Length: 382
Image 1 (cartoon, rainbow, N blue to C red):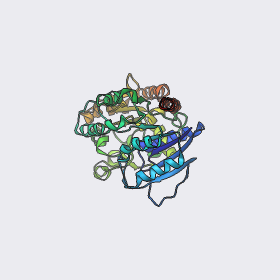
Image 2 (image 1 turned 90 degrees about the vertical axis):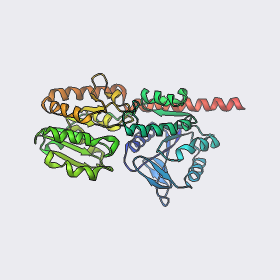
Image 3 (image 1 turned 135 degrees about the vertical axis):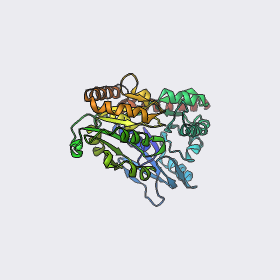
Image 4 (image 1 turned 135 degrees about the horizontal axis):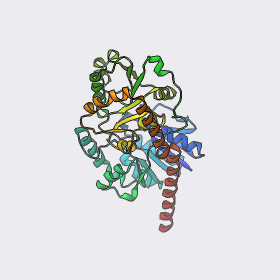
């Protein structure tokens, strides 16, 4: 099968990781993949990781959204005509092009699948979740014109159905992790820091990630020199937070870590992984930490609470995150046997529900279903 994948290669975010992992897995299973992504206009089309790569021109792109140039839709249409894929899969980049894709693919008679990533809080408990609701309301009428839309949880499915997306258009296929690569193992990262207990946050340093709630709780707890908190990632709030929460408080800011093996080494060394978000979809960083056998704490934003339910981790409410962590952090410091047990349960949960292998098997079945439906539609028109 030939899949034209539309997504992002940069800047680093969950969407980029999702596209890399899924397309590599599809290639490993013998499929042909063409990767169309936003890049500078002067970039030459080339082969990347076994994929033919096509550049779509843009004006601006960030970890959250993308603004294409006016000619991007023409470049996309021309490229799809030349590539002649069996199916288009768009890992939606919060771009105006997302709204044009159904019309373009219908004109070319190519089935269209989307993965809809935006984080959410179905309970709408804060200003950020209200803003995100607008994104879902904006997209819902257009998602109804895709052949299928992949989302990550039943919560997200119910949310979109309430906004008018036909239920038969929605497919719940959770994010998946390569559990051979992300697995428990030896690491000397903790000894390099001379820490006895290591706590880790990995993700964007932005408002919706609520990192300051974690930093405040950490600073208030004064856990001592034997415990350290490592912050992996960058974002808009980095410069405003780092001066107030530094090494004198046992907080190490690593910034963005590009090397995947180093990120795995950090997770393998961690005792506790903490994700204090106000909004989430289904965090790949959380799943990666779980797969490495780390005790995990996350809010019930998006599907993360569903991931950790029934004892696979500790679930926080998005209200009063600082006070909840203020209570929990000393417990994690003082009870290593508890964190070890939580780490075992986290790994078991990923093996049960969130492996990349199962994800790709479900994706292949979805592709086959969409292609079969298109053939039936064509034959009925003949």
